[in-house]
Image 1 (cartoon, rainbow, N blue to C red):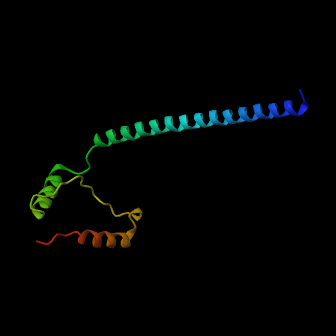
Image 2 (tube, rainbow, N blue to C red):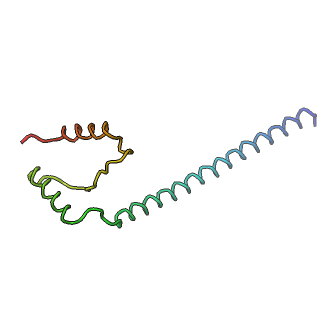
Image 3 (cartoon, rainbow, N blue to C red):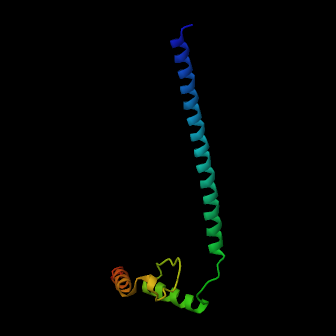
Amino acid sequence: MSEAFLSSVTISFVGVFIVFATLFILVLFVSFIKWADGKWEERELLEKENALMKQQTIDDTTLVLVSAAIATYFKGRAVIRRVRVLPKSPKQGGLWATQARSVLQSSHITKK
């Protein structure tokens, strides 16, 4: 056989090996991403379950009063998903954020 033919066969085998090696690396990478995503979803589900078990930070009397006030204002058509206290802290954005929150919340008032 000629030397050119042997050289071309060798280059072909090396090329096929490189292609399959690259595909194998891609399969490993995709499998790792799938495994990491599964772990991430498990952690999110666990955090969501732990959030349901968290102690409430507002007492029952205040919760009942807030619920009654909202139900009275909306004539019983409101669904209360959560009640939380917004503390005055620098991370809340200060006066600008308070003013913007006030404007936004007052724009949602329904007409009677």
